[in-house]
Length: 274
Image 1 (cartoon, rainbow, N blue to C red):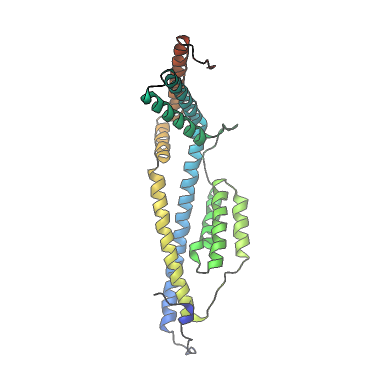
Image 2: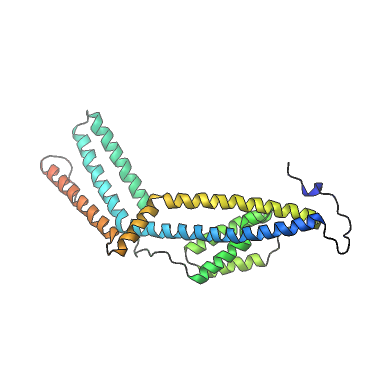
């Protein structure tokens, strides 16, 4: 069981010129902790970059193609529902209609409302990266062993991540300045108590590094990131994959509308303006 700070015995007065073993170990652990702080800040920056890049690309994708997919699914649902209405005893068509409507609603919800302006790709300036890296190094919640301070840091890091994704450099500076003016709560005195705190911070830092790596791998394997890579690779050879997808879906929508009109002409079913 990990020792409590209160379990650590009081230290004997220091002997001039003699470095006690715990002081030597504390110095070594402080160096290890400093290295983890630096690595953690770099990993957090990489994760923040990737999240922002994928998020920005997803908004671009939805702006150019997503709304068209929603329109296509809506037409497919209408066609399936009319077919089910015409043959109410056909359980297969009833199920197909329900599934089509479910997909249409899901696509509509995921796409949301059309934005008035085209979303822009994410691109952080070197200065903003520098500020975020410093925020992560100083404010990261896994670099403290104090519960109250950790909770405060978690809120600040959430604000920092949001500010970074929005490109709000002034907000990042404000977060850093506010934290620099505060003092971390520290209990216990002497090298022994500080050694326990540093060891716990190292353990917390390593745990967070593992979490970041898992998050990075999940983002890199995501369908949206893979599509982003495909778009970027195609752009190097002069192809616009989003434009191609848009044209393809528009063609499918036209086919669906044509089918609706043809079936409407041969039935007495409800008419819906195409």
